[in-house]
Image (spheres, rainbow, N blue to C red):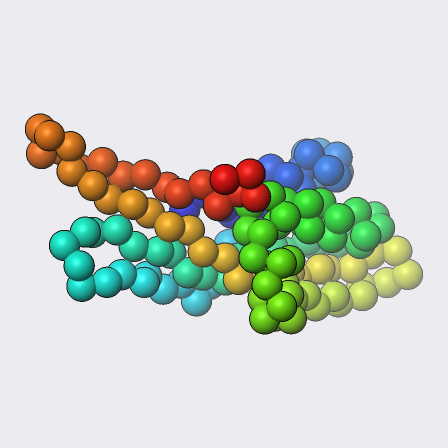
Length: 135
């Protein structure tokens, strides 16, 4: 899976404090499933909830969500273009710790398509489909 690392990189690039304190940003996957068909192809789709946990955050939550929305528009555009996905595709919870810090938990419903084919020599070729808005 490629997208969780991309989310982390986008947030670190947008919020310098994550570079200095990488333990304040955790990205992990829950509720994963595989969607495959009974066809001859071994191609499939990862479907999962990507959790982003920002701990003891003293910055502006807008900065986190702006970076996240920018990443989503590029890499999982259906979360902002599909009416059904816009409602539940990105959810969050915030635990206010004190007047200056909060824990922010964000959940994104992500998919990644994997195309599996065989070349002329019989070798298996695996290609992750680029879901970016430019394709």
